[in-house]
Amino acid sequence: MICFADRAAESPLSDRNGTSAAQEPTQSMASFLSPPEASDALIAAAARESAGDFNGALDIYRALMTRDPEDFEARYRAGTAMMRKGDLEEAVTLLRQVVFTRPEHGPARANLGNALLLLGRYDQAREAFLAVLDFDRDNRNALYGLSTILIRSGRHAQAAPHARRLLKAMPESAAALTLDADAQAPLGNVAAAIAQYRHALRLDETYVPALKGLARILFRQARHEEALDAATHAVARGAADAEIMALLGSIHLAGERWSEAIEAFADAQELEPDNPEHPIQLSHACRKAGDLAGALSNARAAWELDADNRAAGNALGTALAAAGAGLQARSVLMAAGQRDRVPQGVWRDLDVLVPQLEKQAVERAQEAAERAERLLAERQQPTDQAPAAEELFTEPASNEIEQTGHAEGETGEEGETRRDPENLPLFPGM
Image (cartoon, rainbow, N blue to C red):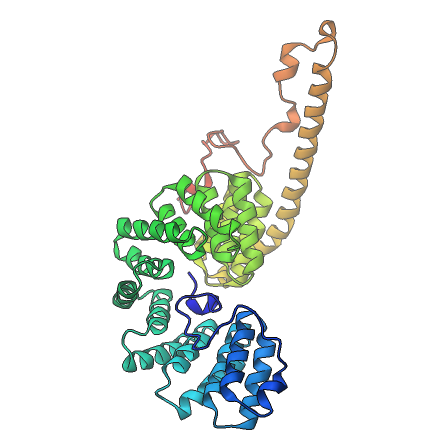
């Protein structure tokens, strides 16, 4: 989900407060300011903004502020242009100046909230939006911004009334429909939320927040193919952020498409390298795909990002068990998510085990490639030289399970039945 300020240049809720023009004016800035005519200059600046020329618009606003430091309309417009340009800190400074002197200036206060929201300063943004609603309880930007903050903070019940008021004012807005669905879905109104996401997409099939919301709720309903379709469309529309890539990875993981899941989680990790959830999911996907070295490395990386992350510790313990390192797995699982409780010997063992697993994986891949090449060559021989059937279907001894792991249902050296690591007791043998 994004806030309207993310799409301020085209959002129907963005409080532009300026006259737009189809084309950028051809007159020079000096023709507006000498002799100065503030209204003409503001019209020219608004036209430049509409054409995407934020620097040109800012030149005009700055000239107006230099000429008259009390021109708070120019100051407000300059702050708004800076926000749209992405200079959020400068935007906050200018908009605060307007609000300090003109506390009743609702558009300036609303855009101040938008800029603070984009900076992630939720508490300050919330105060700004609440102040706007004190003056104008139906202000659309403030309703959207406040609802967004409450939803991101997990306070969906508090967000719902504000989102519903916005939807009542804008019943055919894809953004308002999506926002209300985002608020309603966690409250148990799943069917209504799905209907609203779909309605939003009928109004605007390219609206990424609706695609993301729909994919998320369908995945939670275990409607994986529908979720995959929505998530794939979101990515195709340019929404390749960490959130959607992680969701796409989870959908592929649920569908047992291991390589696609690994690729999606790796993309999420690249986009958000400090989030331990991505390498945890990567570890799960690698283990499912049989890449035990990757499973171990990613779980360890996740735990290094967050030393108190129990899920990271469990992922590492599960990967160690899958690799046949039962004693090390037990030590990790006994740490109960506290990385500093793991004996140093485990890390030394891991430093040895991972390269061994990587080497074995390379060797198996090479053997498989050579075997496939040999079988292909044999099958292309004349019929009278065809190999015996048993030669085609008997795997060489090099393909046997390594001592570092056992296939599910196989019997180990002591005769016990090996099980999937996820089903192993926490403390084997106790």
